[in-house]
Length: 315
Ligand SMILES: C[S@@+](CC[C@H](N)C(=O)[O-])C[C@H]1O[C@@H](n2cnc3c(N)ncnc32)[C@H](O)[C@@H]1O
Image 1 (cartoon, rainbow, N blue to C red):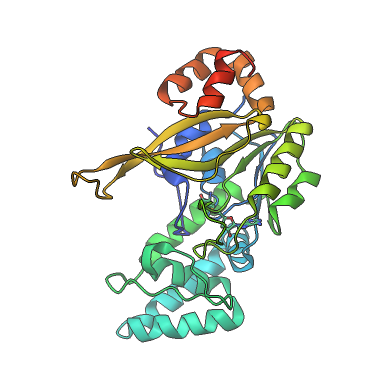
Image 2: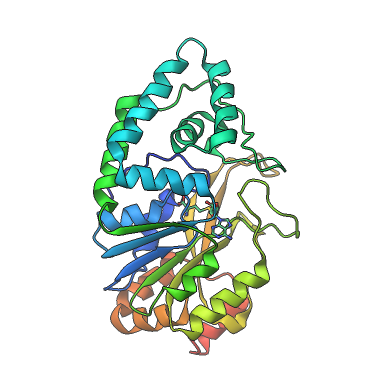
């Protein structure tokens, strides 16, 4: 059983819940684990804790978030102190103080303000309006994590990643120039709806075709990667289907139960899809025969084309 891993940044969409399952798909040796869509870096922390990668490269387009990650990793004392000051200053005027910090954050993009807002806002969700201003409301039932507990999370997080992590703000496509076949890339792009509308829950929408070309390029360079892309709750699938030509190996992992009401008023299981690149699949088949077999049983391939390719021995 995995110990509770540090997570100072509460982040909607964090992969903390399925990090353990993703780690089972790691090859024996990973020089650098790349997270081009780092968010709260849940997978890198898990991999660092379990010694499954030597170095880490965290990238995200959200500049204040990258500022916060940098500060947590490299200046833990300072950010813990800043959080505590904000947390204490709010006491007795929580709602008004949240609004004040949110206004200040929108002017300055200071990392400590972002940490305070994420600790206090509804569902830890980074929501921006059309002008790019953070506009999520506070969860008025919560004051945010207690400063002492936040300090511990920050320090544990920093100890795992400091001295061996590059943190960068940029577009995921820039990672093509720095990744190599001895590395592993974990891609967790923003949720893809079935419509072409940009999803306002994330910093930026993502063009599916650009992502597909990027994956094809990674394949050309023999890069080992794992992609989180779509999923399903009960029989309802979400997300865009990826082209079979990418030759990805599809697995589903159980991500928990959703209380989302079904017609019968019950609960449904939620599954998240993982896609493995051919370079990774080949290696796991050679070195982890038994393990991959067990994973295939644990996960279920629901996508016909992928199941078919497997049957035909094309993967
Ligand atoms: C699903 S979240 C990642 C969550 C992360 N795996 C975790 O455990 O916290 C997707 C992230 O992609 C970032 N993002 C959106 N568009 C991007 C782009 N073009 N390049 C890099 N990052 C991007 C968002 O800011 C967001 O943090």
